Length: 220
Image 1 (tube, rainbow, N blue to C red):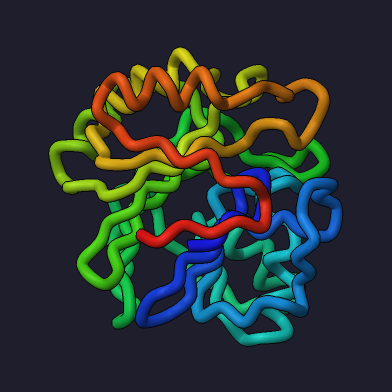
Image 2: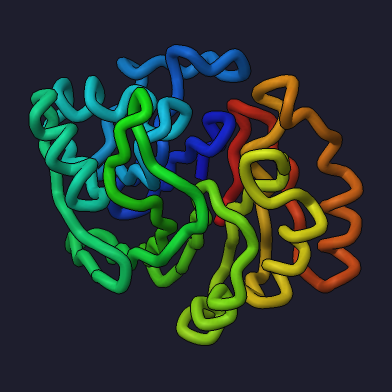
């Protein structure tokens, strides 16, 4: 798995799954859209720092963007290939399976609401990874932890617009993953923080924490 920066990841297995590809305007990444050739693009919601370059990458590669119906309709209108699904839905791509869950946040472009935000569990090569998207803490994360034996959780910790470190730790208690990667911090002044305390506390809970710099990778 490659951490591109902010909330953008590339999962590599039987296929390549790109999540929330915020690249060209991201001050903390050197990855460019033309560097990527994914088989599937997941977008948690419509905000610019998550939809990012998804449309351009889809137009160039033909990779479908899997997202909620309203956002799927929007990206299709912009020339991308889209696949619509909703919370509770499961999409089997052959090389991976994706299930959609809630995320407590919003989803808009230039003030125009485009459905609701979601989070994803991606199961590939016998491993399940949870990408929380931009979310606050919510109790039904426990249901995700009951359904999946999560190898890895990708959790926002920046606060202000998402969970902060304290709530992300509570989320770990509900999700019960083996490992965690903190995300959605440091990109902007309002979400700057040192993840070391979060990682130390997560390790005390028995969850291995990997603070990966943008451009770094993790063997999952």
